[in-house]
Image (cartoon, rainbow, N blue to C red):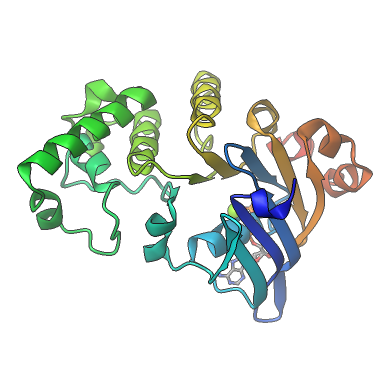
Length: 261
Ligand SMILES: Nc1ncnc2c1ncn2[C@@H]1O[C@H](COP(=O)(O)OP(=O)(O)OP(=O)(O)O)[C@@H](O)[C@H]1O
Ligand SMILES: [Mg+2]
């Protein structure tokens, strides 16, 4: 695909942590409405790449384009302006708010000012509209019946559903998910795969994930990182057979998920 047609495109990204090169000349292309997965052994640089897109790590060099235009590396507070949403690590729901209020907060464009007064400073009409959108997102994520609960009353899988609904309520063009299947049982992983497949109608998804079966079920493109470099990219079946990928996963204990490729 022509680079101009990509929703997000990264070139020549290098990130050093002191003397350690965590990412080395990395590229990444995400087309609209595609699911792209980042895989690779522990320490490969997946989270660092994810964090660079979210503005949590500053690149030493490299270029990023969004919707065909070169942009500055976004700050976390600018993500919503581009239409980029992410689920927060460790779910990150606000304990003092109900599930519905948490999801409504996801629509706040200025994520640095998480004040309840902002939420309730909305005009009644806007608040009703936002409530309806938040309920739609909760229903889609399969947690509509939990809307009045406090986050502390949710099971872990339900809290992940709510976090997903919160990310989606801003109707993003790109959704970033760091290990969305972590800690879920097989039924819940299958359900998440259905939800992500469904999402492709409205947005693109970039995810970091260790569950290889899950990745193979949902990904249009897979990027494999090892020691900070992209060693392979393409559809899952192509990447899986790539000798560079097979070699990278050798030596990893085959009883772990990492070795299951
Ligand atoms: N803030 C940091 N300071 C120093 N080194 C870091 C920092 N963050 C990551 N690293 C190092 O950079 C390399 C890449 O780490 P990263 O967390 O991106 O890997 P990963 O692919 O996400 O691994 P995992 O699968 O274990 O989550 C590792 O060697 C890691 O120790
Ligand atoms: Mg990681």
